[in-house]
Image (cartoon, rainbow, N blue to C red; front, side, top):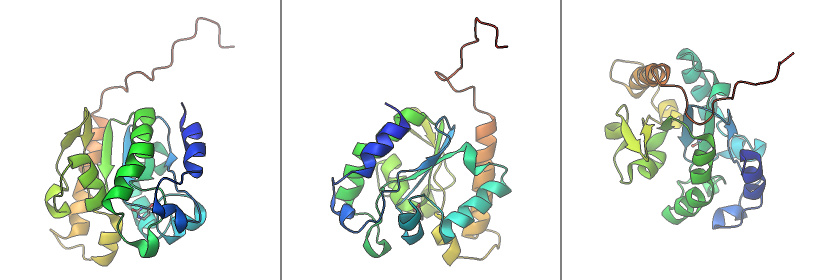
Length: 204
Ligand code: URA
C-alpha cells in the first residue's frame, strides 16, 4: 500500500453522510516520510474547493506559524480527522470521525510513520487522547499514542478569533508550543525503517 493508492481509494469514499455535501475529498498532503504529522479537524470551504488541507485563512495562519518556527510546510504531512467538509463547517459528529479515522487516518499514520503528531484543536486532540479534554488543558503537553509522541496545539481558526498576542494569550502560547515542537523534532533519533540502503553498485 502507498499513500497514492490510499488516496485514490479515499476519493471514492461513500462511508458516511459527509460525502453528500463535499466537492472533493481532502485526503492530506506533504512529505510521505514526514517526522511530524499535523492533524486538523476537517476541510473548510477553501479546502473543499481546492482538495488541499489548510489552504484557507486558518491554513495561511498555520503556514506562518510553521515558517516562524523554521519548519518548512513541505517537510511535514498535513491531514484532518475527517476528509470531507461537514455542512456549514460544523464539527464532525462522533460517528463520522470514527468511520473516517478507521478507514483513512489510521492508515495514513501507518504509511507516513510520523514520530510526532500535532493535533490542532479539541476534536483532533480527543482522537489521540481518547477522551474529551479542553484544548486549553491539553495543549502544550506531551502525550503518547501507540508509541508516537503527541503534542496538541490550539487550532489556527481559534487563533484567528483570538488575535491578542499578549503574554498568556492563545497566540502567545502557540508561539511557545511550536518552538517546543521544533525542539523535539530536532532531538529525534533517525527515523527507523526508512533508511535507504547503501548501494552496492557504483552510483555513477
Ligand atoms: N481547518 C481544519 O481543521 N482543517 C483544514 O484543512 C482547514 C481548516
